[in-house]
Every structure is written in C-alpha cells, then in structure tokens.
Image: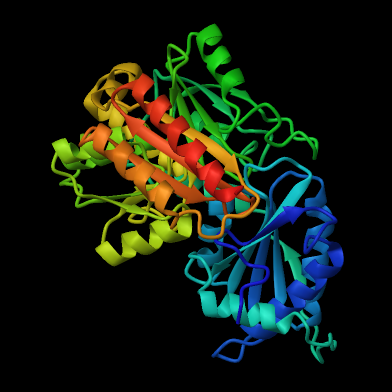
Length: 448
C-alpha cells in the first residue's frame, strides 16, 4: 500500500493540521496496539513506552496515545520528557514491545510528530508501519481487559548511567570547561548531569523549557548563542543538541562551529588510531566532499546514502560498519547504541580530543572542508526536470570544470516543490558561479 502518514522519520507536521490532531493520535495509539498485539508470546501483556520532548502539545498527544493504547489492551509506561535515543534504550531495557517518541526534533514548537522504535531499539520495519496505517480505519472497540499505565520514575537516572557507561571505566572529563546548549528541549535535565558526573565544569544554557521555546534561537540548528557564550566563558568547547537530543554540533574555544561531517571524521580517525581500526563510514549525499577526501587519504572506506538516518543505518548494516551520520549532526555509532544519540556521540568526540591530546580547534584542522554552495530552485513543476537534456548538459559541463576537485548534486525536496542545486569544490568563486549557472537552467526547465 502507499505510505500516507509515515515518512523516513516517522509522522510529522503542524499541530492541528493534517494528521497531527488529538483524534488522530487516539486512533494511532489504538491501531498500534492492535497491530503490535495486547499479549506477548508468553501470554503476558505487552507494554509500550511513551516519551516526549518539551513542546506544549506533547501533553495532549501523550494523553491521546495513552488512551488509544489502553483501549487496545496494551500496558503503557510513561517516561515524560526524554531524549529520543533514551526511548530507544529504555524500550530495550524494559523489554517493551515498542517505544513511541512524541517530538518534532529540530522543528519549532508549533510542529509535532511521532516516531516508533521496535523492541530492539531500532526503527519499526516498513511492513509494520504499513500495517499500522491500514489499521487506522478500524472501528475502536474497547478491549475486554483494558491496559494500565504507570509512570517510570527512574528513567532519567537509568539513561544517565547508560550514557556514562559508553565511555571507558574511570574515563574523566576533569579539567575541561564545557558550555552545553540543550535547546530548551529533551536533554535539558539530563546532559548537564552526564557531563558534570564525568568531571567536567559545565555552564549550561537552553535549560528552561516553557513549552514554546524549544529550538528557539538555540540548539544545534541555531548555534550563534552558544558560539558567543563559549568565547565569553573562556570555555574549552561547546556542545549543542537539538530539541529531541539525537543531533549534536560542537563549537571550539574560538567560537568556530564544528559540524557533523567534521565530528564523524574525528570519531573515525580516533577509532583507526586508538581502537583497533575503522572499517568504514557512511555519509549522505550532502556530506562535504572534503570529508570524503580526508577519509580516502587515510584509507578509510566511505559511501554515501540518501539523506535520512533510516538510509544511513540501512547502508551501515549492509556494509557491516559501525559509524555513520549526517552533516546535520545526526551521528550513529551502532557498536555503542542503536540510533543517533547526541550525548553519546559527543562523548565519542571528547574521547578523541582526550586521546589525541590536542584542543578541538587544532584537531579539527586535520580535515579541510571544501566550499559548498546550495541554491533552492522553486518550480511550477518538477516533472522531468532532472531528465531534461539542457539540465543534464549543464551538470556535465560543471563536472568537467571541477574535474576531480568537486562534485555536483541535484536533489528534489521531499516536502516542497523545490530542486536543491548543490556544488562543491576547492575554488569558492567557481563553486558559486557553477551553482548559479545550473540553477538558472533548472528554473527554465521547470517553469517552462
């Protein structure tokens, strides 16, 4: 069947519009309960965990999902505000049938969404998501034995210990001054404790959520405040998470932003030099070409997946590799945990900084980012544009000028009538010119 609701990252949209309404959440909870089943193979009652970030609509959707699941006969564990990767971990820990996250990640508070994790802490298989979609139209019949709900009071402590356990025994951040930006999101009450308990001096910002300030001029998508505070505090570095805690960005002591490609590179070369090797890294179509060249120079295999953590994880599994991620800071180390985790990824980077014995601003210079220029071309119609002869010729000519020192990527937006034209290369002026030239041809082809 066609996928109507589930995208590559669950269900997401603006509250009150389309699918994202309390009524839909009630039906979704019931459908999920019916598909996943009220009882397990041993005859016991299945349990499903629900966590959320700090946006105000989470209270409403949590109650609706809880009611739908209970009506289907499923027991529900309520976690409260928790990072997305924490729900993945706790789903495994409590041997739950599934975990549900109520979050729109890095989006503003007006948006919200739903993400499911399977019993092993990974994304639900496509077929299960399709079965849940098909069950949305089932008439709601109250189960003979209603499920029950309970609040998991020690969830925060369990997850803090899990994060700390991702580092070696006696690992310490003593002597390191860190500024944390928790985006007024789900890490606000967790990340400062993790880094303080490991010995760091922590100055935290973005830790006063009020339901509407999540990701507002803060966090990994808006790091300007963090860059300023790191310099003002004379900190060694800064770390920014997004609203649901599955992404991370760093800032060095000079206030320079260190993005996901650079962080992945540091994790990879640390494993190569100190942890017995790195057998390969998965990036995406948007990963910086300088990242690819730097890995190639060190003989670390690299492949690109489509944009989206689902595709990165699929490629990692296919190749048997443990490191992958996106330039947005969504980093996955599958030998440590099952999904992207901002706190755990940050600790992996800090291990690299410690073992190399260099400050972050020096260590990050081991990889040279190439100039990248992207133009979003809004079109009347995208049909046939990428197959248009003039567009193909323009791309070929640009690739010829770049030779082996750059690349061209044309990528349709998944949500808007846009084609993104991206060019990378060593010559910044040439990159901008080629991107503009291709964008002009794409616009002519799509608006003809």
